[in-house]
Image (cartoon, rainbow, N blue to C red; front, side):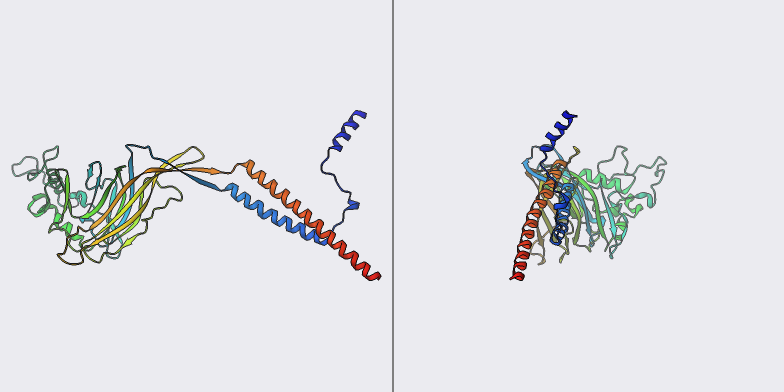
Amino acid sequence: MGRRGGLAARFQSLDAYAKTMDDFSIKTRSGGILTVLTALIIAVLVGNEFAAYRKVEMLPELVVDKERMEKMQINLDIGFPRAPCVLLGLDIMDSSGEQQINLFQHVTKTRLSKTGDELGLDSSAAFDASKVVPPPETGPDGKPYCGSCYGGVPPASGCCNTCSEVHQAYIERGWGFTDPDSIEQCVREGYAKHMKEQQGEGCRMRGFIEINKVAGNFHILAGETIKRGGEHSHSRYDYMPTDFDFSHTIHRLSFGKEFHSQSNPLDGVSKTAKALATQYQYFTKIVGSEVRYRNGTVLKSNQYSATEFTKGDSVEGLRRVSPGVFFMFEISPMRVVYTEHARSLGSFLTAVCAIIGGIFTVARLVDGFVFKTERAMQRKHELGKLN
């Protein structure tokens, strides 16, 4: 018992938080008000700290981009209210010398009415002959039908049984598809009539294209793309719609996968052409971006800045401008790395303890000052009454 009592007494002597007896505690009105204010201040500050603890920040870091031989995906959604789908082509040229023509493998063209209503997907890139008169089963000689390619490069089957196959054979030869009315397959399918049906309509392109991550451009122009000897040109023919211009709205344009807080400066840009021969040029500077999340996931994407320039044929015959929309892109040698960062639980608890301890300490000092001031004023008042 003696040892236990002595040990307890030693621990009692180490108590840094000496307690005052209730008989010597004085509660005042000012102390009550100060206690309420102290509790409110602590609640507000702790709430702010908790919000900061829950908040996840992205800390940026600029590094040299060492990635090579990458492919880059361009996501696009562009509307042309006054240009029909049958007239629009989508091509890519880059500084490596690669050219990609009529890239509609992953891009759909939706026909738009004059009021902007969607009329359905356009199939002019590969004319759907199943909706019209099918090719005959046998030819004049009684053998299975085998359509002529009219001098174009024939497909593997050796036969061009549809208008689109003849058109593709012409493209492979580098010829322009100038007169479909002289081609039996196109006359049977009503190809030229189908083209003219879209006169006065609009078009909306949605999808994505893949390019080499080098400087270059992709463009949307009117007419057929013809490739000869490493160069390509765009030609319009009499059977194509003639009433159009390149007024457009960029609903979405991004390079690579999108991530939270990514900014695409060309989203929502809208232009109205004042003349047919108006060419819009957008110059973009692409910066590689990498987002590293706390769970170990790494997302690679790109951000870009943009400037624009417009060329228009305001005076007839003064100069010729190919109407269309061009997107030029340059690749920055730098990469921005965003690392997801959040405060630790230890730092949050430390901040909470600091807030509570600091506020209570300051409140005790203020309470002591107010209490002494009140006592002094009370004594002066009592002395004044006695005199």
